[in-house]
Length: 122
Image: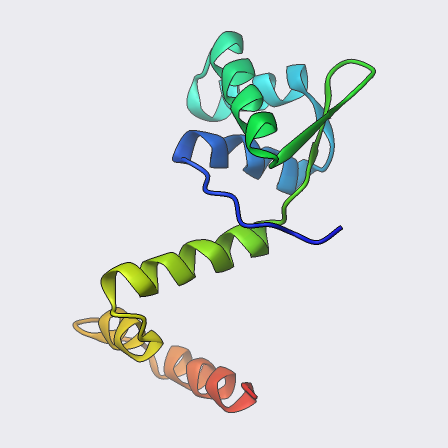
């Protein structure tokens, strides 16, 4: 299935993170995880799951309201990064990269890792 661009809010990303980390889960399981992690009650979790379903990010399957992520974490990261670069850095990845590095002291090891990554890019 080809992945589509879906704009997710922070609350919806919390639901998605459970699915990306644990795989398919029932709504009840997601509610239990989010109660532990962020203190949400069951109704809050179910409401957010329904929003994810409405946006096409999650598919509801029976039995037991089994939830399945329809989009990957990598796709959401890519979409969010593209929006950030477009919105705040005039579409320039160079400007984003410069902003990330400005004022930050990186270790020699981190700089070497970044150089390796840049050299590996096509």
